[in-house]
Length: 449
View 1 (cartoon, one colour):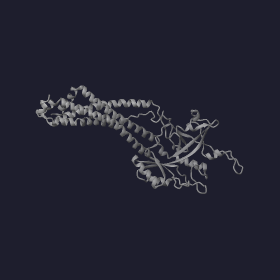
View 2 (tube, rainbow, N blue to C red):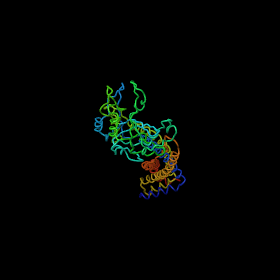
View 3 (cartoon, one colour):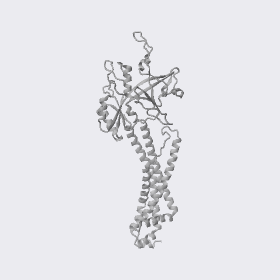
């Protein structure tokens, strides 16, 4: 018997018993929809969690800081020699030195706090900063600042003390166009006006006019920028400026010798180590901490723990959906067994006419497979509808943890896998009825009423 003949006969036999077939298909529809929706929820939650982790920093970046001894003194430094040593490690693509310092910004009656972060100008292009106005740092001959989109929230009225966190209104300052004066010597600023031991009044520190080279674009609704609180600049220009301001004094945040004098070299606040692949991050991080003895941390630690948690959640959700499909498989088996009982004489005639036993088996397997295929297609369509409703409800929700994003995600591989799985379940459920049809005695089948 040709394949097309088997295909035509199996599909025709199904629609001879429309109600029973429809009810059996309905069971498969519910089973497939349950599995797809449950798995899509797990995938969506996992993707949302990964996006949240990635928004707080690169998944393949390791932050290295100086270790602290029990007595509070530092021994290991972040310097050029260490950078060269780390760059030579396997899987390390690049190392970005970071120099952090704080300063006070003034404009008219407003005063603010700046968290300055100096980095090599080559690295800014790789940081994916959304520039609203101007350009990224490093293109000017003198020190310029690039302001994050949340820096203005740190400004307040110096007379009343009221700022954004008290009023909910940002100060009327254009960081790109207005002249901002910056005080780097914060210790001298807060002690100005006080009297020294010899009766001298401490003077106000010098203010520097630092031009802005650019400003980060505002956040979209319900979004967060990992760069928003920082004021960025070129690290070499920042070094030059700090050496000029403090000369023979200790720069705030920098270590000093046992005699209280500054070192000739400016040490970095942290090193950002970029690894070639997420799978190699923990290996490099372990080397930095256990072998080199530095403090190192990365988002890979969060990813590893979250993947284990989400894997368990997906397995539980998939198992819940699989129960429904198991029930549907029982329904397919029942339908095929009833079909065999009702078509016993037909099977006997086919055997007497010399029909191959494998064709009889294939006929019933194809009928069961058809039930799985039809149920899988309809179930997949129902899954998309349910997923759309879930995502719509999530988007209208004000739940900050979910951020109003899509929590149900159906990838292409899940679509294909669900159809194949539905067909396999149908054929497996029809296997034993098909074997029973093969074993029927032809004469007994013909005599059957």
